[in-house]
Length: 436
Image (cartoon, rainbow, N blue to C red; front, side, top):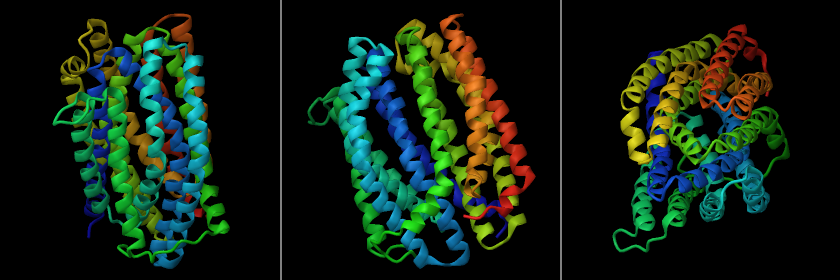
C-alpha cells in the first residue's frame, strides 16, 4: 500500500468523525442563536470555560496515543490493554474533582468577566447541566484513542454519526419543543449533548470489555504506565490549559466591546472548527503513523507520512478557505439579524479563514512532535508565541485602541509564526531519539 493511500484510508474516517462531532456543537449554537445574542454570548462563555476540561482529556488521549501506537508497532497488545485500563480508571476518578471545580468555577468567572444579567442567566442554565457530560467524554476519549492506535478509524466515525443524529433530533425537539417533546430552551440544548454522548460512552465500554478490539479487556491500574503516559502528556496539557485560560482573559476583553463583538467572534470560531476538523484528523493520523513507525524503528517512513499529511492539509485548506470567504455573508445572516453582529461576523470569518493555511502547518507538525514525545518543546513554543504575539497585543488593541480589527491581525500573526517554528523543530529530527 502506498504511503498516500495509507494516510487517506486512516484519515478520511477521522475527518468525517470530527466533522460529525463539530456538527453537534454547530447545531447547538444554531438552536441557541434563535434565543438572541445574549444566549450566544452566554453559551460562548461556558464553552470557553468548558475547554479547560480538555486538559484532562488531552492527558488521557495524548498519553494513550503515544504509548499505544508504539505497542501496536511492537504488537504488544496485552501491554496496550493495561494502558487503556489505567487511563480509564484515572480519568473516571479525576472526573469527581473536575466536576467539583466546574460546579464553582462558572459563577466565579462570570463575575470576573462582568457579564450582564441576561448573559449570566443563559450561561448558568447551559453550563451546569453540561457537568453530567464529563464522565462520558472521558470514556469516549480513551476508547477512541485505543481504536485509532491500531488504525481503526471507521468505528469512531460510525459512533459519531449516531451521536450527531441523536443530538440534532433532541436539539430541535428539546430546544424548540418539536415532535411532542417539552420546550426547554438552552437547558434542553445542553441536555441533548449529554444524552447523545452518554449513549456513545456505553457503546464504547461494550467495545472494550466485550473483546471487540485486539486489546484484551482488563480493569487494572498501573502506576508505572500512568507515570509514562503523563510524562509525555503533561507538557501538552500545560500548553492547552494555559491556552484556555489565556482565551478566557481574551474573551473577557472582547466582551467588554459589547455582545455583538463577542457573539460575532463566537460564531466565527465555531465555523472555523469545521476548518480545523480536517486538519486535526489528518494531523492525528500523521502522528499515529509516525508513532507506529517509531515503534518499528522505521524513522524515514514516519517522516514521509507526516510530510504527506502537511501537503494534503494545505490542499484541503485552499478549498475550505474559498468556501468560507464566498459564503461569509450568508453564514452571518443564519445566526443573527443584528446588522452590527452580521458585519463583525463576516469580518471575523474572512480573517480567521486566512489563518487556516498557517494552521495546516502548525497542527501537522505539532501533533507529530507531541506524538513522538517532544511535547515539552511544543509547550514552550506555544506559550511564548501565544502571549507575546496574541494575548498582550490583543489586550492593548482592545483596552487602549478599542480596535477589534487589530485583535484579528494579532491572531493571524501568532498562528503564522508558530507554524514556522513547529515546522523547523520537526526538521531538526530530534524526535527520532525521544524515549517514552
